[in-house]
Image 1: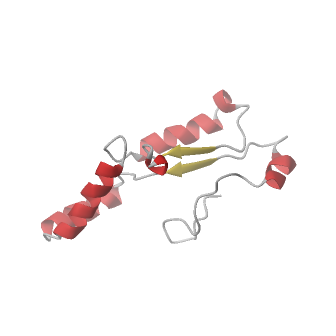
Image 2 (image 1 turned 90 degrees about the horizontal axis):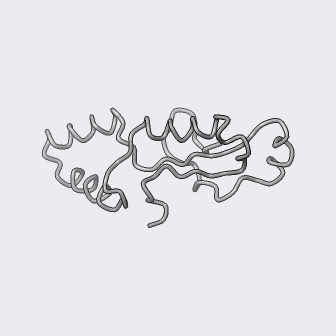
Length: 112
Protein backbone atom coordinates (compact mmCIF):
# COMPACT_ATOMS: atom_id res chain seq x y z
CA UNK A 1 0.00 0.00 0.00
CA UNK A 2 2.98 2.29 0.11
CA UNK A 3 3.00 2.97 -3.64
CA UNK A 4 6.34 1.35 -4.39
CA UNK A 5 7.21 0.01 -7.82
CA UNK A 6 9.09 -3.32 -7.98
CA UNK A 7 12.82 -2.77 -8.17
CA UNK A 8 12.63 0.93 -7.27
CA UNK A 9 12.80 2.82 -4.05
CA UNK A 10 10.72 5.78 -2.98
CA UNK A 11 7.15 6.81 -3.50
CA UNK A 12 5.40 6.58 -6.83
CA UNK A 13 3.05 9.26 -5.53
CA UNK A 14 2.88 11.26 -2.31
CA UNK A 15 2.00 9.22 0.77
CA UNK A 16 -1.72 8.90 1.34
CA UNK A 17 -3.43 11.28 3.77
CA UNK A 18 -6.15 8.75 4.43
CA UNK A 19 -7.05 5.27 3.29
CA UNK A 20 -9.94 5.04 0.85
CA UNK A 21 -13.19 4.62 2.76
CA UNK A 22 -14.53 1.82 0.50
CA UNK A 23 -11.40 -0.23 1.27
CA UNK A 24 -11.97 0.17 4.99
CA UNK A 25 -15.70 -0.54 4.81
CA UNK A 26 -15.20 -3.69 2.77
CA UNK A 27 -12.33 -5.22 4.72
CA UNK A 28 -12.47 -3.71 8.24
CA UNK A 29 -14.59 -6.49 9.72
CA UNK A 30 -11.91 -9.07 8.82
CA UNK A 31 -8.61 -7.20 8.56
CA UNK A 32 -7.07 -3.95 9.70
CA UNK A 33 -5.59 -1.68 7.02
CA UNK A 34 -2.91 0.76 8.20
CA UNK A 35 0.07 2.51 6.64
CA UNK A 36 3.52 3.22 8.06
CA UNK A 37 5.37 6.15 6.46
CA UNK A 38 9.09 5.97 7.25
CA UNK A 39 11.29 9.04 7.23
CA UNK A 40 15.06 9.26 6.83
CA UNK A 41 16.28 5.78 7.74
CA UNK A 42 19.93 4.90 8.28
CA UNK A 43 20.22 1.66 6.32
CA UNK A 44 23.36 -0.20 5.28
CA UNK A 45 22.93 1.28 1.79
CA UNK A 46 22.80 4.81 3.20
CA UNK A 47 25.92 4.14 5.30
CA UNK A 48 27.72 2.75 2.23
CA UNK A 49 26.84 5.83 0.16
CA UNK A 50 28.01 8.14 2.96
CA UNK A 51 31.35 6.33 3.28
CA UNK A 52 31.81 6.48 -0.50
CA UNK A 53 31.00 10.22 -0.61
CA UNK A 54 33.48 10.90 2.20
CA UNK A 55 36.16 8.71 0.61
CA UNK A 56 35.73 10.47 -2.76
CA UNK A 57 35.55 13.90 -1.11
CA UNK A 58 32.07 14.53 -2.56
CA UNK A 59 31.41 17.26 -0.06
CA UNK A 60 28.15 18.34 -1.71
CA UNK A 61 26.59 14.93 -1.02
CA UNK A 62 27.93 14.89 2.53
CA UNK A 63 26.47 18.36 3.07
CA UNK A 64 23.05 17.35 1.74
CA UNK A 65 22.91 14.39 4.12
CA UNK A 66 24.04 16.52 7.07
CA UNK A 67 21.49 19.25 6.29
CA UNK A 68 18.69 16.71 5.93
CA UNK A 69 19.57 15.25 9.33
CA UNK A 70 19.58 18.71 10.89
CA UNK A 71 16.08 19.39 9.52
CA UNK A 72 14.71 16.40 11.42
CA UNK A 73 13.16 17.49 14.72
CA UNK A 74 15.03 14.69 16.55
CA UNK A 75 18.28 15.68 14.71
CA UNK A 76 19.03 12.09 13.70
CA UNK A 77 18.14 9.44 11.16
CA UNK A 78 16.02 6.53 12.28
CA UNK A 79 16.87 2.86 12.15
CA UNK A 80 15.09 0.09 10.29
CA UNK A 81 14.44 -1.46 13.70
CA UNK A 82 12.52 1.64 14.80
CA UNK A 83 10.25 1.42 11.74
CA UNK A 84 9.84 -2.32 12.31
CA UNK A 85 8.64 -1.61 15.87
CA UNK A 86 5.93 0.69 14.49
CA UNK A 87 4.81 -2.08 12.12
CA UNK A 88 4.94 -4.61 14.95
CA UNK A 89 2.71 -2.39 17.08
CA UNK A 90 0.11 -2.06 14.31
CA UNK A 91 0.17 -5.83 13.72
CA UNK A 92 -0.17 -6.63 17.43
CA UNK A 93 -3.22 -6.97 19.65
CA UNK A 94 -2.22 -3.65 21.23
CA UNK A 95 -3.63 -2.04 18.07
CA UNK A 96 -6.68 -4.31 17.79
CA UNK A 97 -9.03 -1.33 17.37
CA UNK A 98 -6.75 0.62 15.01
CA UNK A 99 -7.61 0.65 11.30
CA UNK A 100 -7.29 3.33 8.67
CA UNK A 101 -4.32 4.85 10.50
CA UNK A 102 -1.28 6.42 8.91
CA UNK A 103 1.64 6.18 11.33
CA UNK A 104 4.56 8.43 10.45
CA UNK A 105 7.80 6.95 11.78
CA UNK A 106 9.79 9.95 10.61
CA UNK A 107 11.23 11.92 13.55
CA UNK A 108 8.53 14.52 12.94
CA UNK A 109 9.83 15.30 9.44
CA UNK A 110 6.33 15.35 7.94
CA UNK A 111 5.33 18.08 10.40
CA UNK A 112 8.14 20.42 9.35
